[in-house]
Image (tube, rainbow, N blue to C red; front, side, top):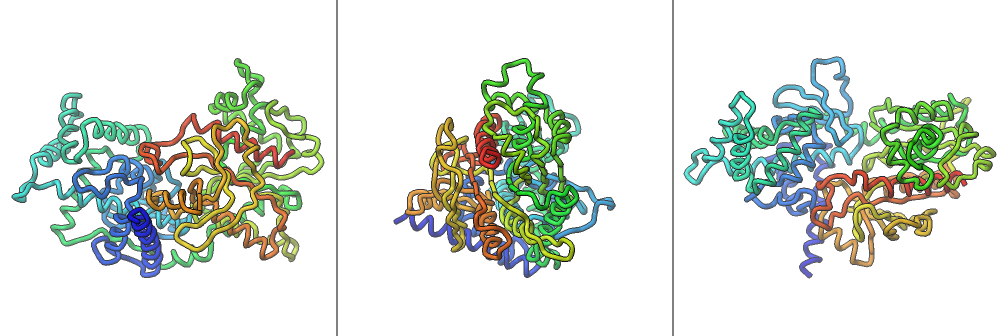
Length: 559
């Protein structure tokens, strides 16, 4: 009964967070210490997302969660107290500094020392994502502030030492750095080794990517910023510009994005050909179709024996592969709409005569007869997937008449959290269940477990489409796993892709015979400590499942 109660409370917290965020978009502004901000904080604390670890423990500061958040927010975010979210601001010619975080495709501008502007182009999911991260930082800044003073109200010894360290102008030697890290670990309530590991993580981001400040700066700025706001009776303020909801609800970015694609298809005289849409990364399809012909004969090792060894060895030769591909039907289509979703158009008529890797089972004779076109689109972000596909599948205007795209199949090669297995396993969804709503979609998936012979584990069952990576709760996920849902994983886009496909079928924009293929590889396991998204990416381990799924999709399309 306790498990059910906790799961119930967490599901209500997810719904509260979403409803509050939607309402705040319409209201236009709120303060973090106000009633609306408190709703967000309470919902996030009740939810206690796995990715934010020990956020609810006032004795310690969550470091892995802090790393995850700072990788997805612009540099200097901890110095600001006013955040403006807008649909589009032409700030490129201004003196404002444009910032892009290393692990989230979003554009932001530093307006002044206390204000930052986010350009929201990816719909509601991006707003949820930014708000959860800002709420997390606000909660942690209060925790840090509580450690600044002792019981008598005087600045704590550790904080005085931190201020001295921040004021030092020379780079510390290793002994001074270790003493400063020891002192910081006491403030954070973490071990020395945990603190040092976090420090080194942020140093890589700071020195190599110029993407964040140092751990010392982040902690100092969060605590000092909260102190300053309390003294001046100010607050963290979030504002939404009036046109943002209009642009999001009317799919303005999706319409621009799809118009560019249709225009390019028409320019290439490909609009009447059979079209296969793949949501994927932008390297695996091109590498499989063109890699062997482009660089295979130059390899010093035996490249014919194992496809996955081959693709691992050609990762550094992407420029050569793209150059070769451009002469054989490959057309790059970088995004110009602001949606941050690049595309590739592959005219398979250009594959004639190309030598493919021996492990690819593709009938080039059938390809030459049908001459299908493959449209590869980079990953969408949450609800943006519906906006883009819904816009793309609208009829295109040709010679004063409406004309539907000749869509034959839609394939999704995605990454997801697993509830059953481990990182690198493959999941084949039989349905998508949208978390926090009554929407669920049965899926007639053209991919089957037998298509993935050689994978360690293949799990088949419903997959949960969650509101955001930062809104995952162990109790809710456990309930989806063990209840009659018997869910095998969770992701952010699949359900939104599928509702766009269903809508297009109902409206007669595509045939009801369109083949749908979904497969995910497990990038994390949110039910296991050390395997959440905050623990890092799969790296080389992700090559085999990524290319196994891509290989299967291409063989289905081109067999």
